[in-house]
Amino acid sequence: KRGYCKCDPGSSVDQLVRDRPGCLLRSSDPSAELRYLVEVSEESQRRVLERAFDGEFDRVLVHRASERSSRDPAQLALMCRAEFETSACAFSSVAAAHALDALLVELYRSPEARAA
Image (cartoon, rainbow, N blue to C red; front, side, top):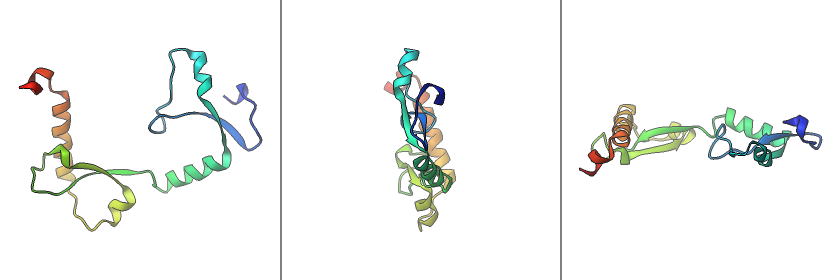
């Protein structure tokens, strides 16, 4: 990418991401993808990578305890890892796994079975 763009010193070219790193903006027109390239300072990239290395963007799937069934997908939530590690609440990985399993089963059921 660097060979196609003239960058300021201390900068490089990267692609814009959608939702999360690794999920890039795409186009059916290969030449249009060049429009999604952006110039990014090496310093800002370094700061974000350090934050990622420190786990700032990590998320943990938890099942919030309640009176409901342990298979209830509505009780699933994503928490920041730091919040999870300092939380006084007890979260069950088994309950989270059961609820995630129930959610996946529901998502992959046929539309006819869901309507019933």
